[in-house]
Length: 288
Image 1 (cartoon, helix red, strand yellow):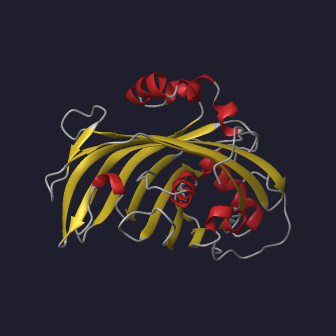
Image 2 (cartoon, rainbow, N blue to C red):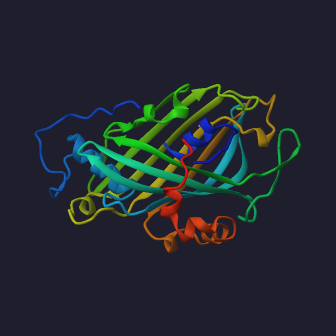
Image 3 (tube, helix red, strand yellow):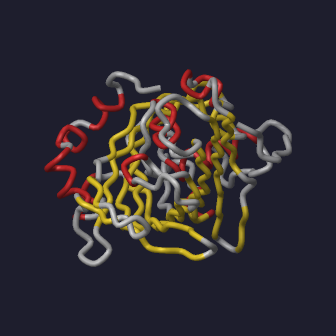
């Protein structure tokens, strides 16, 4: 999710929200619309991923999380601020093994005590008071394949060591979990005093019984998010040997009204176009 840094490469990395190939075994050809997805079949696996992350019919979906960010210093964690974020998605099927994904993200940092929007933040290591920026990234466009995002199509990733991949599905009873990982490293211009490092893991949980219904283009999905990233220049952490850890929980939504009420309130105030016409934002000027 979000830890903004100067430079188009960082914004693109975060807007993607998440490449190498997961260990998938090709089975005999079969229709992805069959009742129960064959998770060893790449086409079925991809359709399952898109139903959990977004929707296969081209409708807009949102994945939101609420959580916190921590500084990891000398083996200890120090809570810094809250996180309230959502990424908007639209998937278009290109062929059996490819979707085009358009996405953008709007995120807010919040006060740990009140849960309200954070505008000033006191660095616990240096005592400096920092202005807290707002975060809006994208839209980005990237091909999604059974193994992960094809980051070679993103111009700003060309100079970076970047990968995104989906782990094989894990199932237990009626539950299915799919985890995606993104790893990006490099030293782009204007990246601040620290080297650019971004590591994110997001796990999606849904029900196999929902995925077995061929008429559903999307299924109810819960989200767990974790990340280890570098610090942004605005946090004024130069000279502090620490990392930035994030964690959050949330859901995938298909209606604005199903988003967290405070997220809707903030977005109505600061980014009304996102709520009024998210599709227009998705098809607006590309960021990367």
